Image (spheres, rainbow, N blue to C red):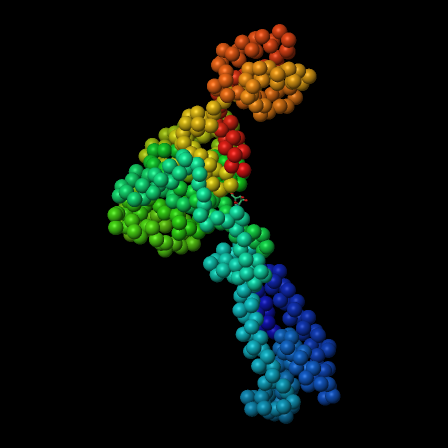
Length: 448
Ligand SMILES: Nc1ncnc2c1ncn2[C@@H]1O[C@H](COP(=O)(O)OP(=O)(O)OP(=O)(O)O)[C@@H](O)[C@H]1O
């Protein structure tokens, strides 16, 4: 019995499986005692049918134990020694078949149990477990489908291409002041069961020098945390595409090696890999200790604590590279020397906030609030200011228009509002240059 419990426990060490294992053994014990045993003892019952029943592991085990008990009972009353090897030849006891069946089933069930064990443990991230999952998908005819899978990820944004170019130059040069250099970083989440796999990070190339704070912006699920986790967190595998500036620091002769896959351990973090290879190259601690990352650090903080945090970050920036993810445009403008906006795992634009605003902000934003009944007059007024005025927001009398900078001057808008006050009940109005938030919305809209 114990052998079978062990066999079923192998399926998983989680208790529900063990309970099922015990129930199986117990159930077959009862069936054996109240059903199968009568067939065995009935001399007229077909031997072939018994053999078929013994193909069920529980019955084969029961038959073996039953025969052992019969021999020991006889031995007890007749003074013999119970079942011995020579008794294997007795045609009536069927022990050779039992041993053969159990041996063959052991050969089959052991790897199968191991397969189930690896496959069903949801938190199993072992290499073998992953391979078995893929094998399972393959066997089910579910060859791994990677959502929007492109082996060659296309980048058509000039600023992003420039960043990629400078990463290549940094990797090609002997010395660099960059604390972080990511080259073509990618992350794929393999779908559970029949779900398609997904590219969470698509070819991120980024160089962050010491003393710079880089802001990662993007909508929920854009791949910011996945990118950061690949560099820093404990339980993520590094891809062979990912190279750290450590190799550059390690010396000229390492360049060739850095372009090849290096030995990566799943149990080590990006930082620990850095330390390991760095120490092998006799690098000093301070080189390895100059990177900080913050994932939405001010989320949930009150304004006073947030200001305090921002001051600390500003001070900490000296001599360190900081990567920060945030949904607060104010935080990005306050702390970041450069920002990158991510959409669907891909960097859509990169640069400092002023650059991005002037690049993406060819328009002013004209906001005006009136009673809802006067909305149409306001739209007419915006169109009079510029025929290309574009309404970008309208709710309960508050409307926002995008007006090209080449079409109007600030004075034109002031004049139009003063004139409109004669016939419209203007509750509030504003005229602003493009904000980082506008850039964000625009870039995200384009990228989706
Ligand atoms: N463990 C995981 N398994 C499968 N998919 C995942 C896993 N973690 C993240 N994803 C998916 O990868 C994509 C990127 O997620 P990620 O958390 O990196 O985005 P994010 O930009 O940090 O989002 P947020 O701003 O909400 O933190 C998302 O579509 C997410 O659903």
